[in-house]
Length: 110
Image (tube, rainbow, N blue to C red; front, side, top):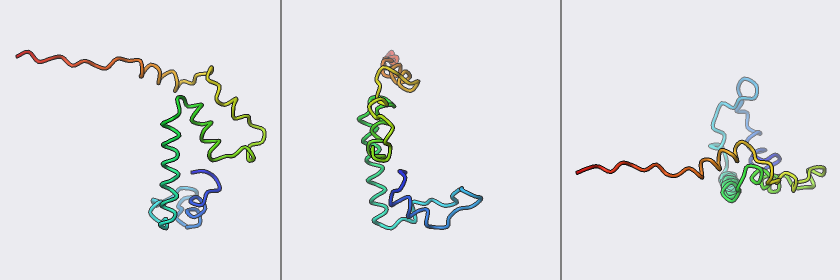
């Protein structure tokens, strides 16, 4: 969940912790109706950003633009994060999976 969001503050206000920082309950169940709607919007926006991203770098760049505006990150160049030349392991595995042909099933002989 993004820092300084309404949902995060609302959830942390409830004393639902056990053993230090571990939460003992499903925190989304204690949200007010307005909090549930806000949580849905956050989830939908993350799903949308993930679906339009072609690589992990692109996804993280879009997430930082959405939830961490540049005014909060004055010394980070977001364009440098979207360097298409540097492929991560995730990008390489995704390319292999996408280039793999589908498995053909054997036809039954009648």
